[in-house]
Length: 528
Ligand code: AHR
Image (cartoon, rainbow, N blue to C red; front, top):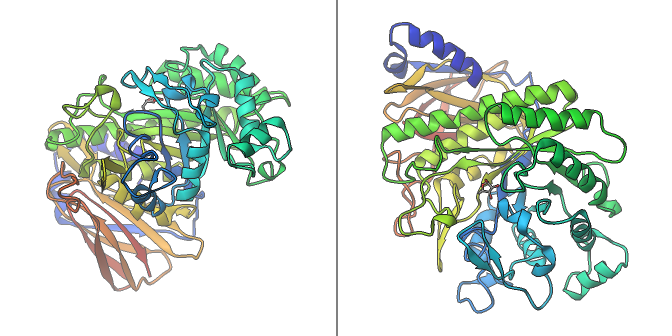
């Protein structure tokens, strides 16, 4: 059952006697997979990351400088690189966020770097020690690809065009020579180009019409002339600023960009439309990232499921102008955004990361997978030490978050083919919040292996499932499950193993897999 269908069903269920939560919890839930009906490819770029110059996301989280005792390679932390490699990070979006529209790339190259300001995020200084070459080195070390956002708000098409030439040209231009003099003779590869960030707000408070005039100029002039980066499947993809929330302001924005795209001339084009959607419930972010109970757990998860409706709304607009789905919807900022941790600079957006966030991540990744025909990129905010991070650091210490573990468990879904899974598991209710009790996706990888991810949202009741694959007698299943004692359990530097995945295996009965899902858990299994 899709989430939208689940909510329709919920409306009926809530008018009927209150039966679902307790009754369903005791029953075995049949899950049926039909691998003969493949859907879209679950693009590996749905598992992208976002690293803005914000708080300790880059400085300390990635970059420790030349005098650090923390083991590093060219000033980039070895522990963080090793952790991220295991996630097979598809791409990293950089340098912002709001920072991108105040970033001037020339300040971040060469032997002498200007010290500038970071007015958006804590009003601190920006050393520019981590610039173009350092970012590309980092990308290379973790085995990822670059998603560079250029400055539309306070920059010019010429500044951005020169950055692209500096990065990518294979011709002996003056900028290429400067790149070589700064240590990199070979051209860098840029996989994605973001044309502005939230141009409707921190990126310049533009109207759709004004942004469109900027977009056309940037799309025309900020080009990648390297032939190797123009080939089919290797072409640099241009992402326009898209909607940032719910309501007419955002549907009108999508409508304006897509209408203009449909009527485009040869001189400009885009490959993607970005969408930002944080799970925040109300502004400013007030929910705690640790030290909360079931009410906050249920409310945050209810809010996060709004992602499905938002994607459906904007996809429907895009479908009208682009029925062939040439333009991807790229959710390049998403995740839980909570109150800053007490004692931290509020502009650093530091928060803990709990089991609730692991479940939130799984629910969103499932939503993206179900919309994989249109949603072909997503970047969780943010990679390290900021918002819903993969990794937290404190000087030489590093800890992997529950969200990290979900991203690691979901690696088999990267570029796998979506296959439908149907089930009806009833609802978990708490107060006036009712949520689909289970969520699941399934996909086949390139080797034909079937992977299933199942989330038990209910924090109080285990769920027994009976998994059947149409036309196949399953023999066994094995994988990992992630849960913990409490909904707000976290990994700390002193107790890094509080929320970690444990192996899980199941045997088959009559060709069906029988599995018990722990309360508030995420489980990923491969079916034999
Ligand atoms: O991720 C933090 C900020 O959230 C980004 O800089 C901005 O794009 C968004 O508003």
